[in-house]
Image 1 (tube, one colour):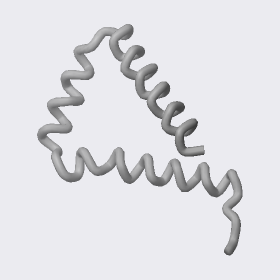
Image 2: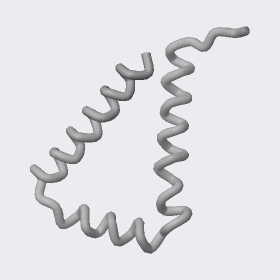
Image 3: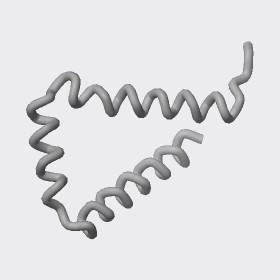
Length: 66
């Protein structure tokens, strides 16, 4: 069995992010547009909080999956 390098793993992870991110607008364009419009109305602090929350959840998942 061939081992996967760290660089290959990062590219695969990026590819999966793009696939998952693309599912919303592809499958539910109207709902995605509404959600995006609502996000535009958020203040900078609120957007930063959601960004921080996403980072924390991602890091927690990485720790759990190791």
